[in-house]
Length: 287
Image (cartoon, rainbow, N blue to C red):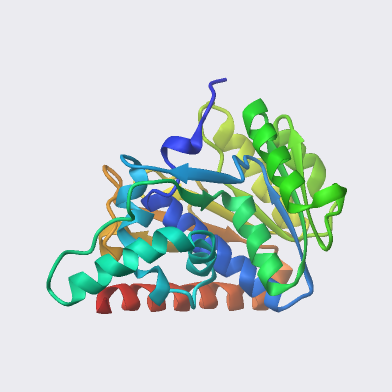
């Protein structure tokens, strides 16, 4: 099995859509309850530091100057909160562009913080003052070290408060499969690197098991490369609609599934995600 490192791709056009929809779904679920159980088989790092050049320039870099106008969306609000210094520079470029003196520019050179999926979920729960239990997996020693550093700084003296993240070292497919039946149902996010020929089959097995146990499942993939089963509900973005550059990729998709008994609640979530998608696209087109 190969080794996947997301640092080269963090913040790209696919990440923008992945995390936008993931955060909107988690926010909707938190609004209807006081807590959230979250699971992810391939967590990656708690945060990435973006610098030019990089794929992020065609993704979040394209939207970065507009973050102050997108804070009604929790994804962009979190990014704004974590990057106040970089945004101060962008505001000057945006003001100049609107007055006709310059074009909208990317963030000034320097490190920009871009969270991973689990860190985004943690930041959301903290801002909503809701309880979170996240169980996530990664086999990479460097990733484990990054999480240890983050949790030590986030929760001094080992106190986690209402929000707990448990990073488990090891095979994420086996770990999640074992975890699903022992945890209260919640939100499962599937985003394996597909560096092994078995990844897709294992992900499908996890999806079906989670569904049967009452979990809501989200599965992200690039539009040009279908990896999820084709009978799921989907929320799609063609990158050009949002002014993003995905390179050779046309767009990205988040597919969702839930148990049969979740019909009314699940339909409410799907409707919410489509409404938020349209609101997001509308703002970008106006800008």
